[in-house]
Length: 138
Image 1 (tube, helix red, strand yellow):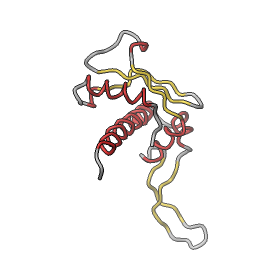
Image 2 (cartoon, one colour):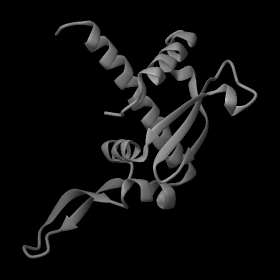
Image 3 (cartoon, helix red, strand yellow):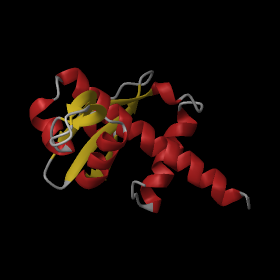
Image 4 (tube, one colour):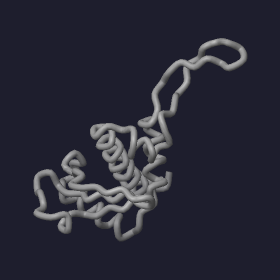
């Protein structure tokens, strides 16, 4: 679960409502990754902003970003390994690198974009699911 403040939740809901609940209209205008935080600036595809100051700034902890990369299997592939002592082959997920190192050093520009879009999708899904679950007793 990605940790976000109540204020940011309100801003995200405002953005979701402003795009008429069409999540495909929400796009990442710019991004920045530090050792601690992935920052995404979000905007409506049909209402482009003149500067990132006008966009919604979304700060996501790097460890949450890494968790999404790992969950989506972006930093690994399915391959065949040979058991070291029993000499039989088996299928396994082979990790290319740790999630953040994979993003910084191994991922292509397209793969980096997929990772950023995956974290945005995960965040929006979490926001909607937790709000719906919070409104009803299941």
